[in-house]
Image (cartoon, rainbow, N blue to C red; front, side, top):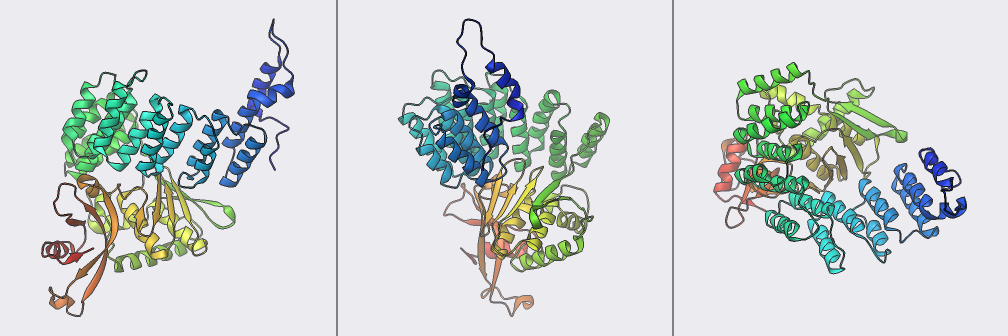
Length: 485
């Protein structure tokens, strides 16, 4: 039961000030005040302290009982908290929205932002169109949320269309955030020159987000020259932003420019900047939260965790999984890279979740930095092999892994980002016409590989992004037409 008799402590000052009658104003009884604005703030304070969807629904029920079910201020916050708890794909937020007779721009924006984070893009566009049909004028945050949805879906045309609407609609001035989204969309689509031109010519002063988006796009497409330009702007705007230095260093490393890597790392040491250690959290037995660092073997059940992880890796390799060594842009041999990838914090957290939770249970992992490409690929395969839903919340977004696919459409993969919209798929390779001495007993082999459709290719040709010993063989088979979806 919710206790509404005592206000939260952080509202005490507000209560005291509001109870003092102002000169020439009638005194408002406390009970009446509580039924008005105070109760709204109190409910929002309760929402911030909710730790589960059940608690949030209790607050919503209390909101309706108190006659605040039509209050856009409270309902907007309620929907935003629901989305934060990863419930945007649940019908509950929509049911709450439908109960509001006169939604305001901020309530619409909360839904648009939710679908921008979780997908699908079509729902974000639907609520934007409905917003305009209902005569509710969009605000600056509305366009920012919608442009972020276009970025996630890599829909450049829709993004450009929305950007033009921002410029043409009166009352809304394009902000640096709007241009950040456009630079991000163009950059991710491989149009780096256009993105750079836009960043340099935008009518408002660009902040770090603009150049950060361009730097991230250069990481995707492997362009160290444009990356250097973006990084120089970032070093001036955010001199202590360690992530910018690390990203530039990784771009140089991927391009084999090791002298530049040493130069950037030396600059980090001079500035006293240290890399934040990767850390993941997962809920274990009795609701206890367990913390894992990369390469951390101090957990009491480390031996069991490694056995579980090795067993999972063996099953994945039978389905064609091969470690994505490009996730580690370091100058070291492949075996050392494999060992480092093996003990990434999210992999350890996943293994512990598999070890301690019952079959069929969803495994939820939180991570303080972005999930790497190899871990993303492994999570896709693990969700298919184990039949479990795996949810990973990194510092960018939620990733829902179900049946070998991710809710982000596997857009993380850099190869896929460079070519088009990616997805995970089971590719069946027929070796009957390509018998070799080493595989004479094989007729059909199933490879679970990361694939994408290139928008620039004709006839919907599927090109696999494959690493490992069989890479050239698979590419030869592809050219010979041996792959069928």
